[in-house]
Image (cartoon, rainbow, N blue to C red):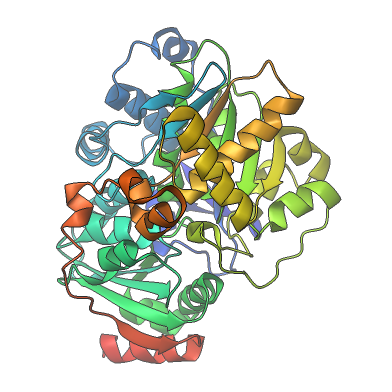
Amino acid sequence: MQHMRLYSTNSPDEFVDFGEAVLRSLPADNGLYMPEHITALGEDFWNDWKSMSFQDMAYQVVSTLLQGAIPEGVLKGIIADGLNFPAPLHQLDDQRYVLELFHGPTLAFKDFGARFMARVMAYLTRDDEDDLTVLVATSGDTGGAVASAFLNVEGTKVVILYPSGGVSDLQEKQLTALGGNITALEVDGSFDDCQAMVKAAFLNEEVSKACNLTSANSINISRLIPQMLYYFESARQLDRPPVFVIPSGNFGNLTALLLANRMGLSIGKIVAATNANDVVPEYLETSVYQPRPSVPTISNAMDVAAPSNFARMQELFGNDWEAMKEMVSGFSANDEETREGMKQVYANDGYVIDPHGAIGCLAADAWLKENPEDVTVILETAHPSKFGNTIVDVLGKEALAIPDRLACLAGEKKESILMAADSADLLEWLQQKSS
């Protein structure tokens, strides 16, 4: 059996194996890695998928895509250990379901990708002498999930860049209060600045090599692979293919669904729900892709104005705007509408939803007005308590319940290093660290 090979979106004729794609994260030509083949799941899988355990189903899906890139026993262990929490569907009514992706250790969907990736990287570097430096930019939840997944993992250091004042208080504590092998860089700028700085570090061959850099952002293909799994998990509980409504920032979640669909998962349509940073909905409307500076919102994890996974989306649709528009519909909401959405869901359904999920609910409502027969699955990407100030402000104190594993961070000391939004400053800091 030929193992999985990947190519760069900028060099479709040059291939690397899965291990190199994961550890390098970003090709030298500044493209993104994509699988050469996306193998469809066979009849045996579809005959049994509804009765499998989540872990068995996950193994079947991932092993079909990876084509032997990780030995069977190792992969089963990675999935059993890394993906050991549920992704339940909460029914609001006959046509709206919320897919709760916050039952992992850091209360966000990023736990799926980060825990899988940390274990894959530990396997790939098991014989290496040099430490791996995981460099990541976060607009909220990625950093916390990565920090938790890699905390005290032997042979790794984690460096997290986040926008100063751009994440919630408890999100910030998840980045800055762990210590150990985790360092938080507080950047005087936006998430897009952080992301540009991380890219610059990877594209600087000298720094990348000296620090043994790898990324944990959704530019890393090993983040997207486990994110496919909760789409299978939710779809198998419904009697018809749902319309998936995806609150979207860097568009990794949506790209993961496109991969799942290419592997054979039947879906209705996809609604890409964004806040005021609506470059992709605008593209779907006009066919013009125009990244611009991001604007801060109360749904901060989606404050992304140049989503890195857009190149993968274009690749999957063969750069065909009409084809993408046929499958993906865009939606955006401003902060005022988001607050109203949160109030509506709480008043009508007795359900507390975070600002990102609220935009998803608004998008689902808009979709169902036009398509009243459909069933929608709305992704709730993080526990609402991670946005406690907004919950209290919009819904009142009684709506806020903070799980112990988050509440315990409130009194911890924040440890961060302030940095200008300047790639040269990051490169200099990394070089000093590696010398």
